Amino acid sequence: MTDHKPSLAVALIVKNEAQNLDECLKTVEGWVDEIVILDSGSSDNTEEIARRYTDKFFVNENWPGFGPQRQQAQSYVESDFILWLDADERVTPELRQSIEQAVRDNKPDTAYSICRLSWVFGRYIRHCGWYPDRVIRLYPTRLTRYNDALVHEKVEINPGVQVQPLQGDAIHYTYNDLHHYLVKSAGYAQAWAEQREKRGKKSSLSQGVVHAVSCFAKMYIFKAGFLDGKQGFLLSALSAHSTFVKYADLWIKTSTTQSRD
Image (tube, rainbow, N blue to C red; front, side, top):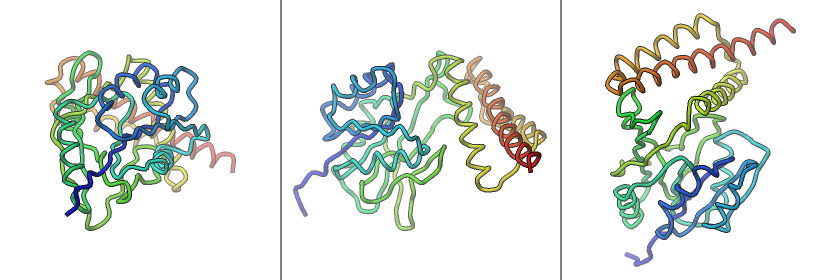
């Protein structure tokens, strides 16, 4: 056995996160060994805030998609473990303790998932299928990385790698307001449609309607979104809208291509 304590890095990919970044980094300041931030071309004072906490601030304005951008950020990490955060997330004391224990234990071939508790439109969302929202965010740096997905990227888990849950929540301040939601969801919808188009996939407006209705029913009824009050209804309705938009966008892209041909 060795007395060497594995080192821990926090990594973020950001753009125009001046409103969130300081509060996020405060929750990891002082107990992590390294902070790595990759910016995709901020026009606010994101860089100024980031440099209060780290000198490992990098820029890649040639946006390759979420997965590849995370891969590039990981290439700058020197620590033994990497913890991924988004600027709109906060590490709670209980989650911090669980992370530190996992790093100390340093189990072989093990990645760790964290639970996110989202604050949406003035309320914590504990239903709608949003909680517990477990995502793999902590792993040995040399063990794995994110995949190549342009959106909804995931950590690659190879055979033989086990995933263990960490205790405690990461508080997720998902949207500032309705406009922020619409802009963010439109970006995801566009990336989703582009990714599907590249794979040769097609869609129709009727598919969009069916998936949108199914999305609302799943979130509001089957996932008990009604227990989240008016926010649960609004979130379910907006999610249904976003679902329709992504299928509609794919239909527009593929039908326009066919018309031109």
